[in-house]
Image 1 (spheres, one colour):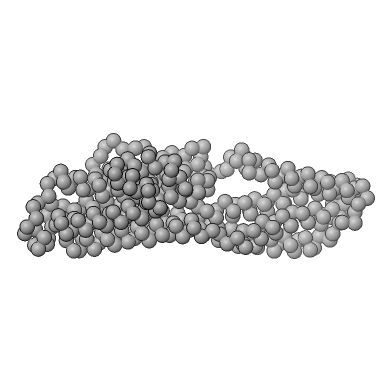
Image 2 (cartoon, rainbow, N blue to C red):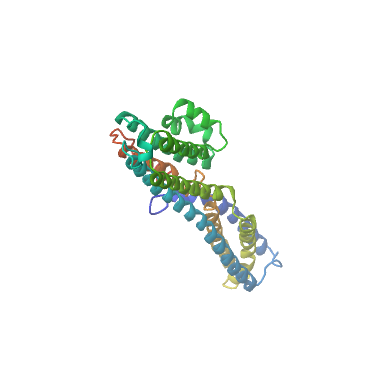
Length: 324
């Protein structure tokens, strides 16, 4: 996610120079042919203006749909952050040595402070591993970053087991549910009410994960994306043909003004189309995507601080104005 208020000129130029170069070359060729007697391909301005209006409406519609996908992705990850805090509070406050369920306390020994600490640690660290595993799945980075971003929060055998799964995030939540069952049935550290509430939190996490997977696995409709690009190209090709006669009427040599005005107008339309294109998939590793790395780090800091840890990792900072 780009965090600077204004785009740097270097970024604007890097994204625009190819289209500007091609448009300039095309417009120069058109003007050269027109000034050397090949003026039969000049067309009236009115149909070009009508086409431009239609294209503007179309790419605006496409951009709205693209932004909706980005905003939904950001809302989902905001829900993951909040639900993670809820999970941590439930794990710390529900899993205690005393449980209000007489049928579970008559034969089971009281949990020691060390056992509770280990279970709290395991429940929260496994959740941090889930957040990072989901991020790596969405960005298709599992093989590259698993050892550094997921494995440190799991036991070695559990990490290796999850690594081999097709959907590690799902199996990590499944393991959390199994842990809750053990706490309820075998250890007596959860009563029915607490167990149900924590299972609902896991259900909420499953819903959020499913929302991410829906956006990731459902591409933006190609008919909207392709025709938007096609219409912008068609308008850019026709624009100088409609401007030639208009500028030629202003006086000798004025026809060459077609080049800067046509290139500028075409660049604006092309930039609007590119903005919509870059917002289609918010879970990549691009400049305008959801900053999942920073959000995962926020979750890690919050949960580890709730555990009482003091040696916490630093917050993720932007790299060249981009927060990943």
